[in-house]
Image 1 (tube, rainbow, N blue to C red):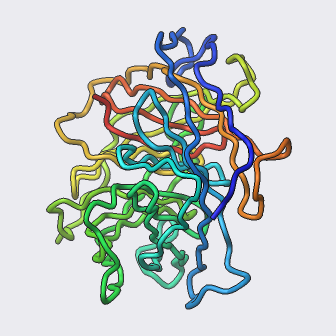
Image 2: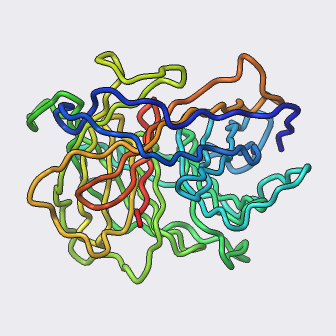
Image 3: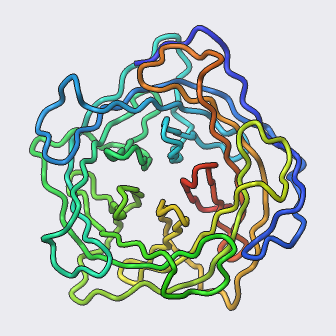
Length: 345
């Protein structure tokens, strides 16, 4: 558990100048209303590596801060790695003492390298599942510091922990910002899809340990795996936390969007290999790629696991929120390329 002795100010609603979609050539406008962020609490999460049966003094810890984003009415969980996820905000508790996270269970998952059909060369990743009892959200966090958040609801610790059930694997291509066409040099990302039988959620995990979690609904393991269907792509700029305005030097990220035909989920994948997943619902494949609309800028201060209080050396992470005009989904992207997507109203 983390304690805090100082107040935290979060920046939001910074001015925009000259950003756009895949070609970065249109001028977008800020939302008039910008209520910003409110810090709620901080937590530390211990995550065992694959093959590590028990927690010990050497087990990696990830410091994580939880903010209320008042413009979207969701809790933002952002780890010291810069990875982020979004949870429900209606049950968050304001209190002086923060309860530590409750461990539900640990999982191990394997991911095959690009081009490999067999499992002999598969990388293994450890994932822990916790409940943030201060806000009633379930937190999935990988040994690489990637996070996935969903409402805990009536879920509780399983009496007998079940291993995850593998569903299927996919490979996708992701262009970098400025890369107009797919080629043999385009980055390829391998990912596997598992069902957490303890919570009935689907976990997407890439070959670099990035994870995303989505409700499994009534999806089942496909008897014949369908490949991903490319839908559209865009480019977005993300400012550093102390970068006031967008400029030609602001870092841009390429994002590809695919439909997983096996369960009707949309996959958003950043050029860093970070992944986000959201239900496709009533969306259909767009006829073209509309440029995203910039909404808000954010700046987070995130303590490392061994950092008790906020101070002038506490690290910062910048983030931007865009609206994907092709699907009406909202895209949260950090200055290190981590991505989170949720359905807009």
